[in-house]
Structures are given as structure tokens and as C-alpha cells.
Length: 243
Image (cartoon, rainbow, N blue to C red; front, side, top):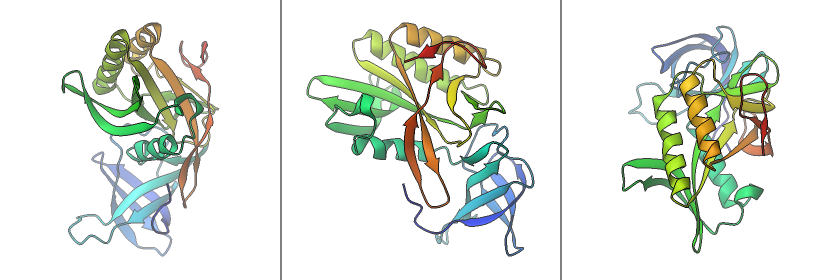
């Protein structure tokens, strides 16, 4: 995924009200920007951090700038979590994920469970089908590890329950962690932050839900899915690998 325009660089002054942040651009201009991330953004919202912004020319937008990237103590991170689906979708369509390359049809934002739930992708090839949910990972443990979620998430738990039910019903079900942080080299559930999610994930894996984690090439010009990363199921940090 290429950014359509050159990103603007600046220094983060503060993030507030979840969806807003103040940034001083390199030219000294102070702007209020949209923050497209509902999570805690632990380690990714430190005042004084170098950040990159996109700018919309839509006159109806209240805030023209959107916060895209941040330079953290462990590396560059993309905090625009909704872009994870776009990056993964491009990789699926270009058959760049070996574990999921055997499907001829890729659909996004699909309704399941008689329309009661929605998942990010449905993959199919004749009678073979796969349902997949994508989660964006930016939480670093301060070394090389990453975890999800960065705050308690009942919604993420519901997605796991949906995947588990689909797997028990005979469908292939995949939880895909898209790592938007260049300093993260492996992923596992943040059991200290959301123990209920960690337990739900363990149950889903036991039921046959597959877990994949991939890193990304992140820079102010583009985002692209990169190499597969290890995933650990038990504890934070450490635990057993899930292949």
C-alpha cells in the first residue's frame, strides 16, 4: 500500500480524547490531527516523538491531517490500525501469504452467523472456504516481543468466539495478527492486560482456529506485508510456539 501523497513530519505534543492529537510540524506550525486508533497506544504516543501525518484536501473534514506513523523507542510503528485490513487484503489478492495462497476468491467485510457477526475476510476456492479476522499489533514489551490487545477488548473476544464456532462447524478459521511495529519480532496474547482474551484465544486454538502473525515493511512511503513471525500462545513474555 503506497501513501498517495508525501507524509508530513512533526513532533507529537499530546494525544487526547482518544481521537485527537496536537503535532508541531517541521515548519513550526501547530496542528490538531485525527488519531485513527481507539487503543491505549502504549509506547506509541509519547510526547516529543517524531510522527508522520497524511493530509486530506476534503474541505468538509474538521481536521485535515491524520496521524499515520510514529518513531518509538523500539522502531517505526503505524498507528492507523484500519490500514491493517488494506495491507493484508493486498497481500491476499497478490498471493503473498503462502498459508492462504490457495484461494481464488477473496471477499472483505463478510457477514457470518446468519448475519449476526462480521469478519474481515472470506476466502474460497470451490468448496474450500476460510474465514479470517485481522488484528493490528503495535504493543511492544520493550525488547523484541509484541502482544494483543493493548486494552481490554470485549469485541476482540467476540471475534474469537465467532471463529471458534465457525471452525467447529467445519470451516477453516484464521486469526491473523498484522504487526505494525518494526521492533516486534514475535507475538503473543497480552494476558496481563486482558486475561479473558488470552483464555478465549487458547480455547479457540484448541478448537482448531489457526493463528498467523506477519510483520510489515513500514516507512513514510508505503506499508507492505513482510515476513512471517513466531506466535506464542502461553504467557507474556515466553510460551510455546504455534505453527
